[in-house]
Length: 214
Image (cartoon, rainbow, N blue to C red; front, side, top):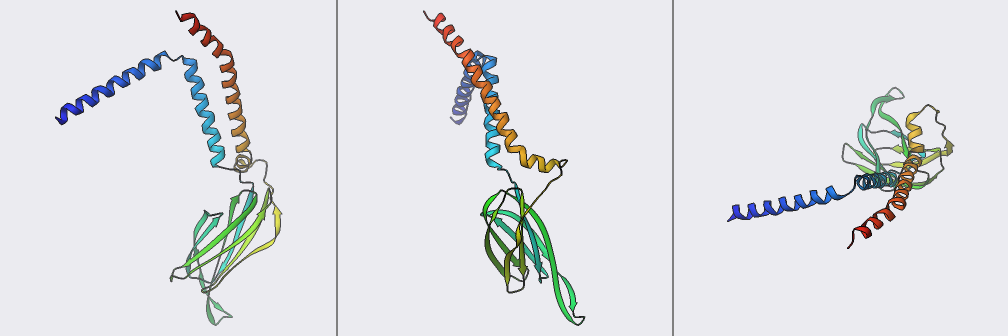
């Protein structure tokens, strides 16, 4: 019984596939080209929406007295950085043992107001977390100072927003700055071409169908 049901299902699937192939063969090649361009334009628009332009930067400047910890940074709820903090044992004033460590990272962000959340989870199980907000100007950098100790952590902005200049030969900077504009330009050109094709071909298709009608 199961074999008969399986055979019947396969027969129905084969019949539907054959009908789909016949239908696809009747569609003009130009229509498939237009459909492909439309899908490509939609993908470009989706990419532009999913990857907004990041025209500013956040510099992390971390000073800590921990032997080991995990640093995590969120920007507006999205994880922007995760890395390991490692401290080196040194003698304070040449006598008392002390642990010191530092870290510096630059993260790309979009201009505008952002909320930054910093979390430091020490290897001994201690977790410290704090949040700070700031306004980021376009093509600028803000430096966030993070001071982490065993039972204390403080956040603070260093100075004012500083302008960032990128060399003209920087490929990554050029892509980051102009990728969104390029995507929109390409998508707009494709949509314009599709609209022009529809204006030219649609009347012809309607007239052809009217001529074939009895």
